[in-house]
Image 1 (cartoon, rainbow over the protein chains, first blue to last red):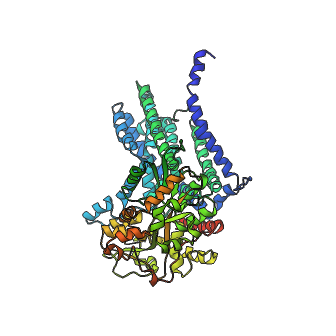
Image 2: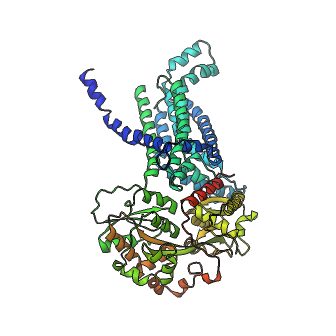
Image 3: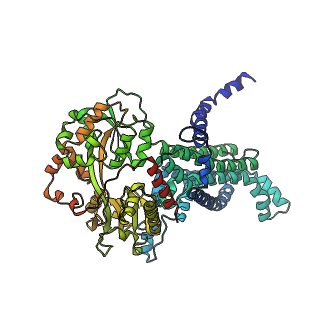
Length: 274
Length: 364
């Protein structure tokens, strides 16, 4: 190993230190708490507690809502990215402007803003009333939570897909056309497969925060819909049961690991990884 | 060039992601204030949200030269774990009665030196000190700050009937117009009182009956919220809400059509009181804070801002007739024989309440 590459490796040290203190150590603490009881003895009860009807139901609700919002994000993002990737470089500034600027605002604030948009006396229903249309029940529903997730996580779907699409060499597409493929065939057999790493990456980045959120469901669900994130939060705050909270977090971690493994298997070159 | 564009996007994505992650961690770490200098002239105060006069902290700092680090909590249950994990994280806290009992039992509080609090000694009403003995025998650990009731707030322009019973919360004509408290003890207290049981019951059958009643009510409930009851009622989001008396008075200032009633089945009468944590590093400052809160002009200023009844007789002497005759703030409690304060029920009962609460929140 040459001297320069040794020095280059040193550049990673601050991050490694960061990762150990703020990622590895907390993770081990979660594992420790999750696999022990209040006296510190080993137990699987906290993990098995996922079978408790309220917990299992919350996990299922989280899974369904998260998948639904991931699907909506994908359906919205992919066509948009096709357009953006085709329109070339000048669209980058558009993309940056419309996706990044809202993200400069605090995520919590934006979710609160949705509250006042969706409420009974909110912006949408006030507008509907002005047009003499019947009011809609939007907030404190599963639909409201999905909307919040889609709004908050959509950029994480758009950016990797755009990234993957923009990387496709135009010559590959030209070659497909030259060889007689029509637009649909080119899309299905060239563009779509080449953009899959971005799609998988996007799915991961929307699905995981959707699975774990407790803020969106609290603010837009009116406290009536319990997600697994809410259960875990309440175990830590209300019940003050760190063991149970950690045990349930471990169950959630399994879903996240599965998701990441799928991503790694489908994206061997690391192209879609951000 | 193309490569660089891609790098930019990647970088932006990771930046954006970091932003979200940090927001997330800020949410969970929000309350962990760092303390480096234990000898500094500071005071860490942990109080309910919007529970102090606007200028009071500033006045305290000016008069004493103590720098106040002021944090807020939303429910007793959220406050407790933090203090239990580190009884020096805050110096002075304002929990409710049953939570003070729990903190005493868990040895998290330090006895107060009443000799150093002349205002607290002179102006705290005797009746309130006597009531406080139910959770703090001998008034060793706490000085009452506010007291009040839990009742029903309704908009008289939207509700045609005169409400006098908890039963209205189960009336189907108020579908999607009801706001309930998102807090374990408070929400079960409503159902238990309606059923005629004690709000301190630990009888599983009674509690299950209360849970079933609340599950039956859930479809009618618009949302389970805490502080938002006030704002949503003012905005006209809902017609009926379960609320604390002080919050009710605040909404009446904003909208005269609001009416507050203590249901005939009885309710919770509570006291919030100042306590000092066991491992406080600023005991003297904390005593100064509590005594400052008991000074009549400050107690009055707090009262006029937060609208919760004060146990401070000095402040009451400064009030005008109209304020004293306000039935929301100073109700004639002799008319009720079914008012109760929350007791600390012990860990086993707490776990039982929490379990039933989860079942309620999880129900469709």
